[in-house]
Length: 300
Image 1 (cartoon, one colour):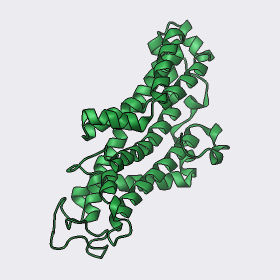
Image 2 (spheres, one colour):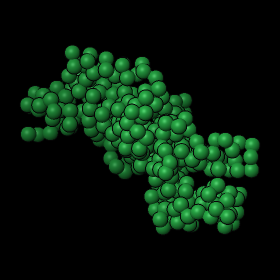
Image 3 (tube, helix red, strand yellow):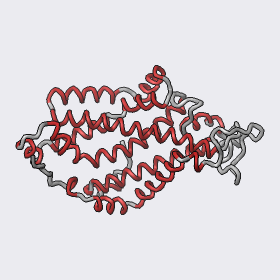
């Protein structure tokens, strides 16, 4: 069967063109470099951390940043930089997992709803609306109370409520794509609905999917930090950046306030870097957005 190739910018764009457009976005390149360094440092913490994990020195206690301990030590005398790097493993792994799972669910539901239409579309969109009208934080807190506070439980819960936005975006894109000439041509030559979706529709959604994954990572880090700060997220002895913020929340106005600042700084830098990368991906994969990207930075 001859493949019908859609004559759109999404399919004729070469890899070199993508990289050229992406590298023109200097903040996106900077964000990608920062994320790469952060990920390498966190997941390679056993090699780069200055001290072993959970190495306590109770006689030392909390000390301010110094040449020996760049980010100081916590109340148990543990090197704070080491603890932040290991906590970053949990925060980043959780964020990446939720972004990939939630995006996969949303793309599947949105693509099927938009392509099939009719009662299937109505059913899927009403379920989506139901998830949208329920306060997310309240739903998360209740769900985690029942399932526990392990990283796996948080990944499952966040994934099950985080797919709604991308589902609506994908549905709108598919509603437009299914009326295009190359879709009609694929049907004429005998392509099944599954083949049309997999071979012709989804490849044209690559830009939307990539941007959503990037921004979902940032959103998940913020949500996990909020949950942990409120006491519903990662619980000791597990540690995440949000969990460290929660434990240091009562130190404002004391000499130990640096225990609050540094995890917050890592969260801030990571979220900003992910947003920059998301902007760069959007501009590189959808040149039509370049002209208006300055007025539409951020995510919903």
